[in-house]
Image: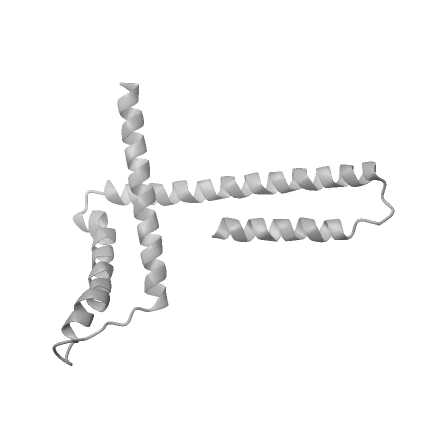
Length: 144
């Protein structure tokens, strides 16, 4: 999402710059300026990819450090949090609708927007962490 936003800003900036090209530019001058802008666009995209990769790697290192900590709570707080979210979602979309057919005492739990965001981040971190863990394991086994 962040990458798409940055890329959109870069593309908009390039389009704005092109709109300010003087109308009396020769085709050679215009081509030279457009080539420079394209080079700039490629460099900015590369820097954004490098930045995204660095973020993913740092998130992966945090998850790996928690997993290798030795403390049961440090290793399991993310899965416990995700399971609590699963219970809340199951309650609201499976249990509550079913129980509400039979009683008016069934309770639906509020799900704040921040919880959905945290759930997305947590699942994303878990998926990245597991992917890195499997990749490292495969790489280690391949070296043997």
